[in-house]
Image (cartoon, rainbow, N blue to C red; front, top):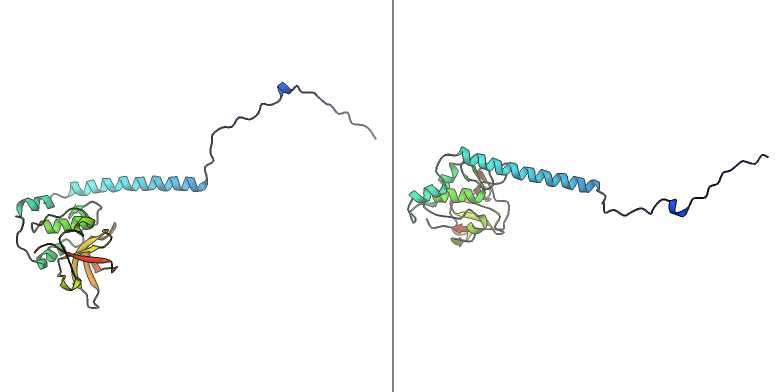
Length: 196
């Protein structure tokens, strides 16, 4: 057997690699990246909604709720049937968050706009509309009164009942929807009456 010639070297301790320094970097997970992309998408959607709302406002040139309130004296007599009939003239108007004209309504903007045409000033807030006026029983409700969800999240016009006895609401429903008639989807609501 032949002996291999091995080499060896002595390395001074001061020439050895220095200890690695600790840096404050953090790893990014796939979930972190996905969450960041979702946050960016939500921000872009919110920005687009604001721009869309501005374009709706710019496109509508008719009277606003404030215009009606300035020309119809407060306390003007009206019937609830006339209120609902006026609301029905806006069938098909698109839902628009923050909207309060036929170019685009949100739920409280729709109720506010219609009632303004009868001299009734309401806030542009579903929770506030659900707490002013007089709360009445369903048995005493008339088409044209306001249905308000108990949690303050939605309002619309009480539109009677259908053939099966379902309570009907005439409202501006949600993004992507249009003003129209549909059955109420919850029992957690009450009826508000505003003069008339």
